[in-house]
Structure formats: C-alpha cells, structure tokens
Length: 529
Image (tube, rainbow, N blue to C red; front, side, top):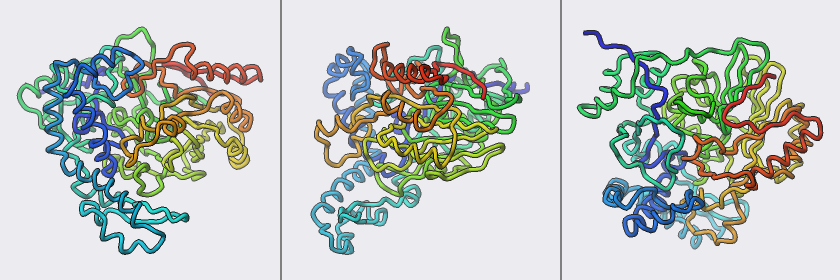
C-alpha cells in the first residue's frame, strides 16, 4: 500500500529549546549561553525546588508574570528537580565556563594597570585560554574579546542541548517562556535534533507541499509511540495555495508586532518574522498560509527575542533566500555575531549590513540606518533599522529606535532623502537592564542604575522629533507587543491607559493634526504604496 502524501497542519506549533528552555540569541551563542544557564536557569530551578509555593503565589499577580517565577504547579517540583540535576551534570562545563568569565574579570580588574597585557594571559582561566584576546580601550580599561568562530567549533557550542517541542494549538495564549523550562507532557512531543538538521526543512516544506511522513519521522529519530504521536500532526487537507504579489507598486502587509511583508512583482521582503499559527479565531490575522512561496529577503533589526524569533525563522528557513543581519562589534560578551549564529543554525545565505551599507535588490535597495537606544546604553552594535527603497517608494523600518539624539535623523535625511512611510515602535517604558542582560553581568548593577538604564523606545516627544526631521508621508506605530500570539515572549499586559499606548496616541494625534496619514495597526493590516 502506497504511503499517502500529507501536509503539516497549520496549527502545529514548534518551539526551539536549549536544555528544555525556549531558545533565543543569548541562549545559543557559545559565550553567552553558559551565563544564562548558570545565572538564570539554575537559580530559578533551585528556587522552585526549594519553595514551589513562592512561585505559584507570585504568579497569581499578573504584574509578576515576566519575573523569575516558574509557571508550573507544585506538583511538577519533582520534574523540575530532575531537570536541575541533569543540567548540573550535562552543563557542568558551561557552569565552569561561566565561573571562568567571573574569575577573568577579577584578574583584569587587579592585573591590568595600563602596562602590557602580555603577562596577564598566564592568569586567564584554563577553560578560556585560546578563546579570548585581552584588550584595552583608549582609557586603559581591559576586557576580553571572545573568538567566536573558534567557540562555535569547540565543545562549548552544545548542539546536543538543542531540541524541538511540537504541539497543536487552538488558541494564542502560551505561558511566558523565559522563566520556565518546557517540561514534557501528554500534549507535546520532544524531538532531540540540532536546529541545523536538514530534516527540519523537509518537515516545514510540508506546510506547502505534501510529502510522506515516515521518512521525516525516521530522519528525526522517532520510534514507537513518538512516531505515532508525530503522525497526528499531519493532514490530507491542503492549505490555501501561496501566491506572490503580482500587482502594481508595493503591497505592505502587517503580520503583527514588527513583522511586515513588503512585496512588489519582483521581490518579497519580510522584517523581523513573527508569524501566528492558523486556527479558528475571532481575531483576523495573517498566518503562515498567507506567506508567499519564497521570501527573497528577511531583515533582522536586532537580537531581542520578539524580533529574532527562531520559532518562526526555523520554520521558514527553506523558503528564505537571504537573511540580512546587523554587524556586531566583534566578540564582546553582550554583542555576539548574528551572522555566525544563523549560519550555525543552517541558514545558507546570511549577509551583514553596517550603518549606511547598501544591498541592491530587484527594483530598489536596502540601506542600514543607525538604531539608537533600547539596549540599556550597552555597546551593542548588532542593531540596525532598515530603509527599504522599492519601486520608487522609501519605507523606514525603525524597530524600537529611541530618538535620544534627534539630530542623527537630520543627517539620515540628508544622506538618504525622502521617507514615504515610517514604521516605529513606541514601547516607551521598557524593562530595566537586568531583565534582559542581568545574567551577563559579572557584578550586579545597583537598583537605581538598573532602573535608569531601560529597554525603552521612543515616547511621543522623541517620536515626533523623528517625524519632524524625516518628513514621512505615512507614520505607523508597530512593534508594540499587543498581539496575543506574542504573550509567551513579551508578557506586556497593556490596558488602554498604559503609558506606551498613551504615548502612541499622542504621536498619532500629532501626525493627523499635521496632515499625515497615521495608524497603529493591530493583528492584520494591508496597505499599498
């Protein structure tokens, strides 16, 4: 009997995991993942095992949903303890690596006096030797530079810790992921394969084109009950056929948050892909089924998990032509290379852009634009807004840019000319520095400093400065985390009087009062330029 060709169901969610925690930029890069394992995951699990009631009671308060509390009942304490014990065993070298970074910092604080660092190399902890260069800045402050290409080829890059969690979804809400590991349950299937595995591309190609399930199941190493559960994720029902845009000008489709699809007859470009799954819902949205068969360019503005979402990117990898990322500053702990990372994850063509670098595309070009703010004043260079010029129209995808230095936009306007449409995020509050970067800190930041240095974008006053200086005809507030399918990575909890939404309305009112088209799209929107 012939094996039927089946489609992957449109409502099958696939989460990438690292040691059973939701995977993102810092949790995969080999210099930073040990810091998150040691300084976040182990500590959260130890706290939960010691006092699960503390976590259960804390999460009764919605305001604490994004805090360091595991989102399971006390009945899962034994499972968390088992994962903790396995982590301490299997990630022992990562814990040593993280401690070595702390020890090296102490060495540099005491041994670097402005004289040559040659002799200090002898004091570098053994596990780091050969993987770091010691450097001074021009003020004689010493720091290590990590040799990332070597680390990716070393035992410190742990592909064995990578896996995928499959489950069907029929609603948007998922538990917040960055404080809680993914424990196995009856509804999920845990598949232990590295993210670069070629069977992943074969699997996700079956969202569009049917194929036999058994060869993919075998390639993923599934047997018995796991293979049987895997087979339930497929269907004979074909999705809506994908279509390229064949109309005039530029079609702009808003998929939610910072995910925007720009299309002409010649080319398709997607920014910061975060795409909803397809299931019955009263909230209309574009989903995977609404994407073109090929996405020629994907533009990544920065590495935060709501903009560089591996859950979506891995599913689209076989459909992406070129993925464009900002260049990092070269080996600092806070700023690992996005290019190296994505190449190791199996993306074939990854191009780095720097500020005002250009990439020619059919019918136009992509230009890197400086992206200030939102990174807590850290020296993180892997962040870039994108000016997309297509069919004579210019669209600036500014992500979470904060106009802390508004005159920069005078220079941008002088260098790049008119802007037809500005897309700008306005998460004007932002979390404190420790919320994202805390596990990387060798010395904890005092609370007053932590609260001062925030992950915030522009408020109304600063956004209006951008509009005044760039003179766009259309202004769109996006990247606000309002869509319900972002809850597992953002946990925003907005209400109508939230400061972020109040500030966004002030910007829209200003634009409309001055004759500019302005809107804050939600869930789904389409416009033409």
